[in-house]
Length: 472
Image (cartoon, rainbow, N blue to C red):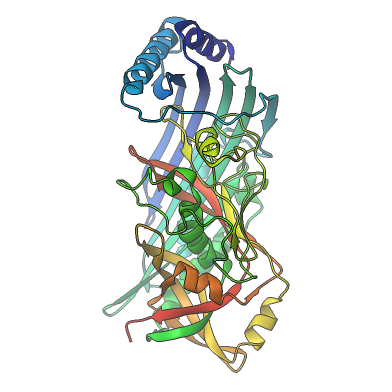
């Protein structure tokens, strides 16, 4: 993939009078396989190539993408982006300013041992069939599903400031789901396996065993007791449940554009706007957003503005420290840009997005957490969130839970959800374990039109207080 067209795009924008311009020239290879109950429902290979161009004219943004990768096609896209920006500038009350950043010139790649294109598509379909079959551990499993996605991206980013960054990335994941039924009761269990890397992620994992475990979990939920509502319960959350919690009540409200109220009409605002430096949780609450963690869905070293990535400290020992920023929002807040901008593909303008957002490790062992808990609940594996517009009130369901009595894990529970407010829960956290786990979340949605982006979330086991909701 030649960088000449990308350089040509920003040169044309400069000639037209843009005060800033950048271009993302990208190649995408996508493959999707879905198997349900022994039948291949979908097998797709898709390739696309294109360029996305942003221009800043008189303090306003314009954007246009094209798959016409000729100089004529690119020039036309630049002209449209320029005209959009110029027209928009007449209606922008405050001109856009960009925080300064170094113009990097570099090339880097995600670590891949087995290129997904080197594994025959037919072999992958056979794998999905075998893994779906393994979900059916008994006749009580009435439906199995394996849903595979593999994505390869080759990207070149350039801008009028001299940046020139090349990034090759591969991400893969498989979502496994088993539905179990006994008389009128239906329960399901899911697990997602994957991250940044090649097909070796599945080759080094006993996927049939993992699938069987998912099926067994679904079947066991049929025998579990329905949870009962318990107010102000002591809860120990596993990293999979923590992943959705940190995603919804830390990740999204930490996006700088949301803090500024720019998502109010679409997705809401955030309760902690203007609270930087305030204590909003206990000393055990530290949260990072870190794109530089290799082998994760949120991995990258430079964002889609060419800003070098580093660990962002969002909350430190309960104190709200910072947000995720674009160069634009960083200028508004008077801080350095921190590589928070990403787009799912060249067709879309970049947005402020989380990467790998997770609670930091503590100094407890998991066994100690259980033994030190006289009465409580071990809550495992995310299911569905329900969060208000400010990310203040939250309810998140879990796939399962267990009662803890006198330091021992006892009764298995189903139909479980937790509810609290963000500050109340943060202040209740009193212990976190030493080891953290970052799990893949492939479908983080934001924007209009919607961009479904892949991220990593998680953390350690952590203990706090919340109301346990059940149907019993």
